[in-house]
Length: 60
Image (cartoon, rainbow, N blue to C red; front, top):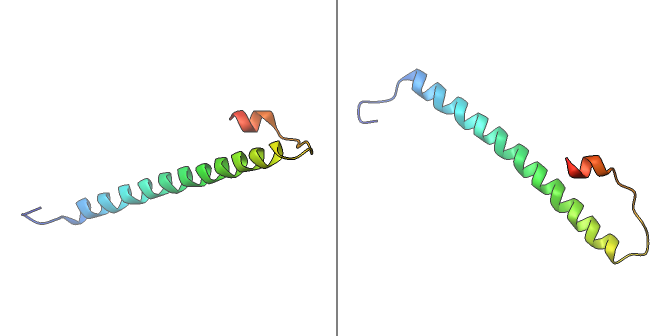
């Protein structure tokens, strides 16, 4: 870094940061879906109503 940063190094850094951000956003979205699902299960346990769900989707 003391000698400076080349354009290709900067482009590579920006590309990798974007890839990392995309991965992070996907993981956070999935985590939010899981939290919502667990919350719904918790609500359903307190309810006498049964809820239909796709077991394969839940397992995946």
